[in-house]
Length: 438
Image (cartoon, rainbow, N blue to C red; front, side, top):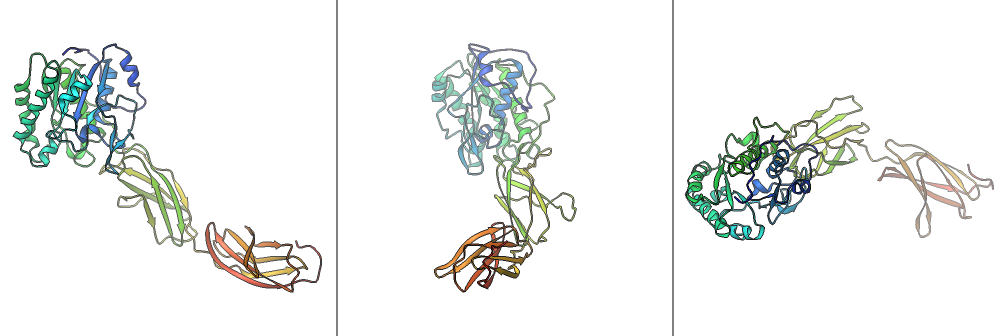
């Protein structure tokens, strides 16, 4: 290839913590290796992922190999809204360009391979396609034949471009193992002295449970394995060192928690939350603080964006927190939402023992506080209806500048924050004393 680099170095695939910027890597050489990554959902990734593209880029950063990922896209698939365009990477600080799309087939690429080469001028093309064709009924032989055509299209546009054919990782799907077995024959058939073609062993030691979050798409550990195998394949065509072994263990599952709010009512608390990106469910943890309970996790993950705890004891203080999941992956480590505290309550009864101490133009109202009342509103009856006089958090209110009529009628309503309780009314005869109310 025209820009092949055979550099020795140490590989870093964990991808944790801040990393150097893609711009800094490109600046180390006036002629970085241009790599076009063509694939389906495994290559594109979804909201909240690092992606194996990120892991591969970090490998080149650690090895000191200047590269430039090229392609018409830079996005993730939003797995919650089922549409493209998400930029919610776990760490967006890398060269995100690619030519992959969720669900793409080798037989139906978004952009023909030759046009991609003409538009983006890669030195190497990494192709990871075929599993969707197999799932839609194409035979392994047919998909292998289509892969030959894709490589021919690449070389028709530029004979010097090297190609890395990555195995489909989902060997538990019908036809995948047979297709992978044919890739060596494909590479032999289309390999050229000018533009090399090699196979990346991305399916080796790749497991459904350990390396995916939904039996199809890679979790963080699967990303590391795919990136390492692609790095090995790129090394075969002279781009950078192979991956060092053993591969690092990286935490799986979402790495940030949701933002949670709570609304309490009569014997219940409803939680609502947003995020984190890509999370498909939440594990709910709770404790009754008043009863001095320990934190306990509820048995089943909760989907959606709300959840209600019923049959709670009014007046007790409860705390909740959420732990995000993506597919069947709970997060490694203490990844939680904010802790939310709420107190269920019964809507307040009407204030009792409502009394008045009237003067000629004012009166002092007092009452006994009902349970769960946090404030009170006071209104006076007028010919046109009830007129609000004000609110108070105390069981006492002074109504002033009252009209010079024989009697006044008042209404006192109890509230629990914004939830209205019952109201009590009282008719008050105007007093004889002209003194002020206290």
